[in-house]
Length: 424
Image 1: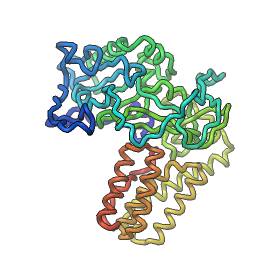
Image 2: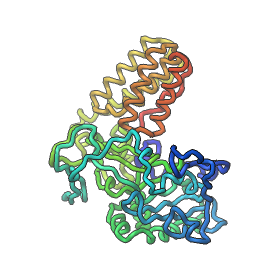
Image 3: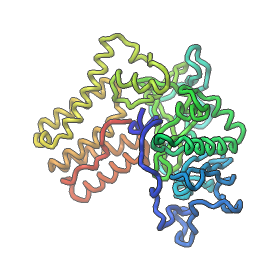
């Protein structure tokens, strides 16, 4: 899958998390933005376990690997998170001591600004056992495009670490011990719920569950795996009827309808980047131990080839737009933009337009066409906020670029339009 997909990420290599957060300032304000003296608040220590008061906001004493194991790896547990289930965070002490407002339950309304509400009343879906496929999620009411279907907080967050070096089995044993010790400190109902999820890779059963069911998320600006049991029940489709977006500010993941969904229809999300061609998707899905037979992959060879052709055209157009030489021709840029837009529409991948428009905003800014750059930058912000999330880093990057364009009158200064490839 790859962390670059912003969805499932097991197996990606990332830099060490140590040093990711500044030790020179307190990154959070317990009282929120209305506190007149945030500087008087004492910052959390990276690790303190001598007294229960040192454990806050955790409800159990943190369990860590030995000091000789670097980077240090600890299990932090809170029995009730956001008034719901418990949460287990497996990360370094430095990351855990970052912005603790992410974990506190004082529930400031300001962190929910800009987020759509989940409809009141019974859930518009039910989790059922589908013969031959395991569990799945079926709509029991009409769900309109854009509606939030579910919002869920993580049961487990695990830092994404580099693969172990040869001969590091002793260190891995410590890591597994920390995982187990942290897990048994969760409420019993949470343990049962997590262990009931699908497994696909073999080996240690809890690691198997995490590998099979996690999403790529950010916690304190560091890459982590996030386990959301309800969302994990939703099966894959290469043309899904629902999508996910994660908020690094609230740690909530939302599932929302990509199109209208009718009662009796199974909900689906994509485990792979939407723009992948069929061969790449099938290879990526081997991590889950199944061959996709969705409506796209199960179509006729001619229809599948046509689908792959449209997705390939999008990638070819994007590669061309990255070529500085081609940016000298406004007519060619417009042609490439139209080609990519048409292919996305025909393939039903409108969710990718936000990143495409971010790239086009940067291209037109480099060309000195400020008006067109602003138009595409504004569209990128709107679409990324909807499909990626209001506070997703791509949305914030696009929003910042739009602000820069406004300050300089729309011209010049490309390279920040929220693009970088269509990887939703």
